[in-house]
Image (cartoon, rainbow, N blue to C red; front, side, top):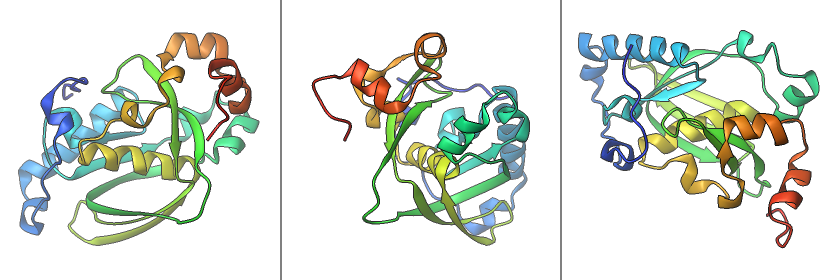
Length: 200
């Protein structure tokens, strides 16, 4: 397992460098991908970017396994538009957010901001062009929770953390989220936490 670095480590605030096609096939990068996959699963998480394990590279792994969703109510899964995502690698990604769409607001956590969550606005639909673990071009159209994961991980590759996009008044521990807010609608939560301002 690799050590997941925490906020404050400079590697998380630097734009990661792109990988050359010949590097992708190297044993070092292939070993890093395998180790990141196991580290992500062990955490457990649905995504992990190379900077989170101390490597300033444009590389991330993503996987939202069916077992992660077993204890989530069907209504919640539908609200989040969350479905299983098979394991995948994105290298040197370029992301496009669909213009003119309203942002979706949900709680989001991060393995590098351990123990905390907050409400983060994200585009509902995105398009990503990247390379896979073999250096082959891939094109991804994603919506809902999958789109959120992609935006979160690609942010990491550009030195951006979810706390930068988070509404500060919604920052809380995971324990308090589970105890007080986890089963409430986002509009209701917003009204309770920031009654002076409408949800953007």
